[in-house]
Image 1 (cartoon, rainbow, N blue to C red):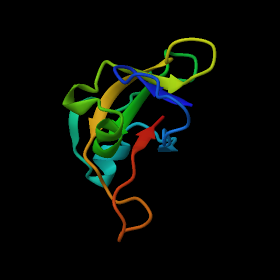
Image 2 (image 1 turned 120 degrees about the vertical axis):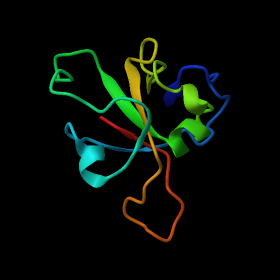
Image 3 (image 1 turned 60 degrees about the vertical axis):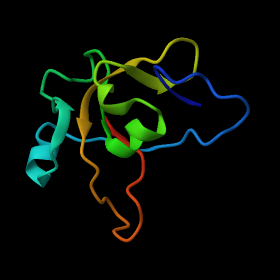
Image 4 (image 1 turned 90 degrees about the vertical axis):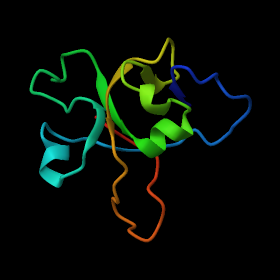
Amino acid sequence: MFLAEGRPEPPSAPDVSAQWNVITPDYFRTLGIPLLAGREFTRADAPDAPKVAIVNEAFAKKFNLGRDAVGKRMGYRRNGPPAMEIVGLAQNAKYSEVKQEVPPQFFL
């Protein structure tokens, strides 16, 4: 189950899914996708560093994070609180299905 800080854990099995992608620094700048808040990844966001994520507008809307998503935590429910800090909010951008709505998406 996927959790986002500020959103209560839902009862039973609602839709808590989101697409995700592993990217590198400058991904958004290279593709011309504006960040609405926060920052892009840097080389300091290495595998041994604290876990961080960037989310798109559809993700922020679905999980009721609003424009204040940066600084909140997210992750998969396992044995503790959400483990990743949201460091950026990206503008929605088409990914694979250009005729469909932009899905909730996060980037690692």
